View 1: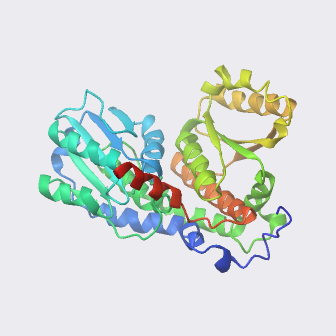
View 2 (view 1 turned 45 degrees about the vertical axis):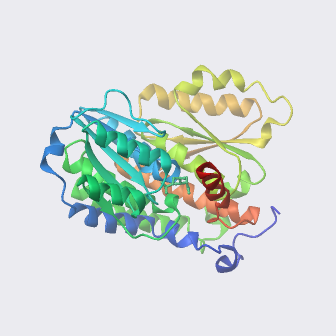
Length: 353
Ligand code: PA5
């Protein structure tokens, strides 16, 4: 029912799994887990790695996709993300493999963990325990164990803080104290604009959720916001229980532009969310504007979203938070519990038999 008011909902009743607290706590929790990750001992030889592979699935892969974007402009070594059972053939003793699994039981990620060990790679696990923690103990490799209780996707701040902290300490990305100091200001911005107490008339996250209601979201990523585009797409899937897709600029200008000729009937049911990054090539900025216009001309719904940031890290964190709120409010409009993802567990158990 689109006529549900987002300003008068009894959030505690609808949000059975208390997803809201994770969304609201994103920035402060990121800082808490950054400090905890900072005191985690990293083996000194990890600095010698000349290739980095981050392995994870679903909600646990998102820290990898987002970190990869932030490392792209700085890291002098190859950074690869694996969301499957096997590692690339090039993985060797000089490769650092970081495996992330919230539960520590995801079979694809566990398999890469075992493969990494058998290839003699430098290996590090992240998660809440499970089989991966047991393997890490057996292999005598470091395991960053946390106890943040949430759905894996809602623990992004833990996994992202850990990966970025480790990458920063190993010299693959610069995250300065000044940048971290500004995370509090992002929280202030969030509280002034997107939280549930800000009425819909002034709350662009609620407004976008309403526009997305009964539409198929297509999130377009650009620059450092490519990984975030995937994260937001997954949040529309998992929080709002809606099909959603994502595309990346400039690549989509070489194919999806042509696809915009169809559907001829009702293209307005597709809603493009363009994540307009400041940290991208100037030509991509032009592409973003032209893409917006072309899809509007073809009667698609389009929202181009910018974020007021002074560093790529800030832009990424703000975009994650914005996507969290929009997908959360869309879940409320869809009248579904934002937390529940029962079908994933059911699917995993079918695979195990
Ligand atoms: O959102 C989810 O629950 C999934 O995408 C999981 O993150 C995914 O199935 C992997 O599980 P885990 O994060 O426990 O490794």
